[in-house]
Length: 208
Image 1: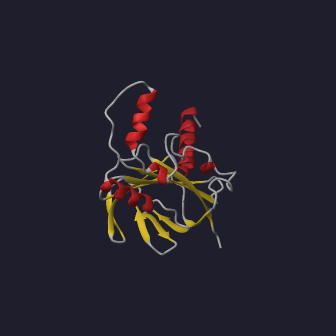
Image 2: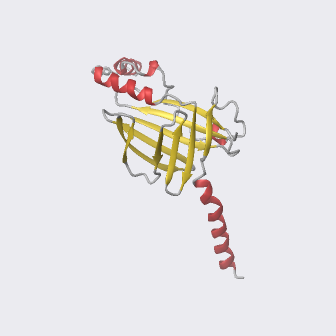
Image 3: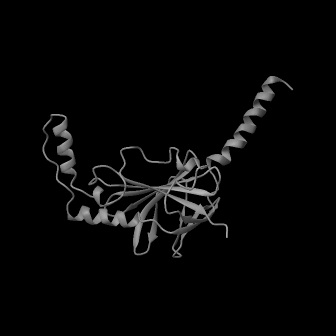
């Protein structure tokens, strides 16, 4: 066997080992843990790049604030003067409240993953399908219609939800090496927010 053939076989074997890791099987029944990250010491999902960057803030009422105040303070520190920016108007505040409600954690959900799509079913029985081909689709959520698209990113499933009225909810699902924990990073983006609002949650697989 020549060196060139051996090298080609090595490349094929490597590709076969890495492809499944790029799209892990997220199927299972996942239950929310009370303190994300504390029960998954063996989990790469607990301490890897699935978290948002350091500029993100936890999702709470403090993030729905008058961004003009924050901008003015930042400009004062740097010794510059700029026109004050207005805070969110009533319509923007309503949309922020809507996004905050969408970002609330569910206590449990089930994922059924196949070649045709990824079906997510919440504990209350509500179900929807994600198609990780990065194409936008209209999905009906109750009485609302959202633009939804999903894709794989370095072994994590990323889903983006865009409701009417602006803003975006982004979910990132990262499976632990143990395959017993699933980290869910949730981020809210809106032009009225000074910074994106972000929170991480950890779910444990329930095999019962």
